[in-house]
Image 1 (cartoon, rainbow, N blue to C red):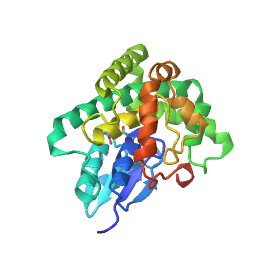
Image 2: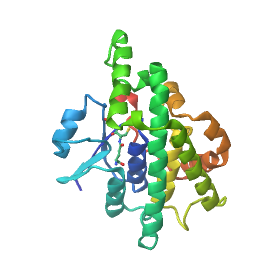
Image 3: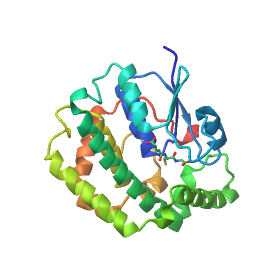
Image 4: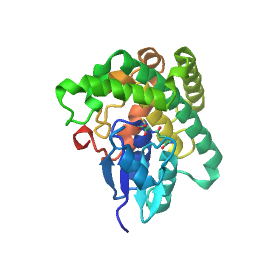
Length: 253
Ligand SMILES: N[C@@H](CCC(=O)N[C@@H](CS)C(=O)NCC(=O)O)C(=O)O
């Protein structure tokens, strides 16, 4: 089998959930670090998307182009040798949890980008090392504006976002009922939900090499305290299930 190319943002939970699935299946891929804004022209060429937004992660393999984290995870299920992440018997339930987790991540993105806009230093470690020191504040500001425009974050009501995240987390707490996995076996539902909690407070794990700035940007202190039980569940899941492949890290950016 030729080696898939995984284009991903080292700091992004959307990339991490696809990477987690690839690593679960022990797929031998090459990861290339995507740099927001600067990397967009090459990403458009590779994905052949010339209009509208383009996002990472993207997986390129044997002439196929997968442009979405969930599509990549499904493809990993076809290629890999690990236990199935999308078992046929649980298809609808996995999809429901992925939608719930994605909603939490989208609402959390509005909160974290607004934190970055208030303190651009939080973005510095997200910039490629090649950007010289005097230009870092300018690039950080551009990055925050770019994300705000691209995801229409100006139009969001942050209090509503916070309330929506709380409702989602309460539902997860009720449905998890203290168990190790959301369904009867470990599935992509667990990956999607565990990774969505990055944006409440990032996990401490070598495959998620966030520095203090990105950690602060991703942390929602009140909710992190209120849902410490879910974070403990996530930490245990990472400790037990997350293998050590992957993770481009900022140095590779
Ligand atoms: N539906 C996509 C959404 C991915 C997504 O939102 N990616 C963001 C992660 S921050 C991204 O590419 N940001 C960089 C950019 O917009 O340039 C997926 O799940 O793969």
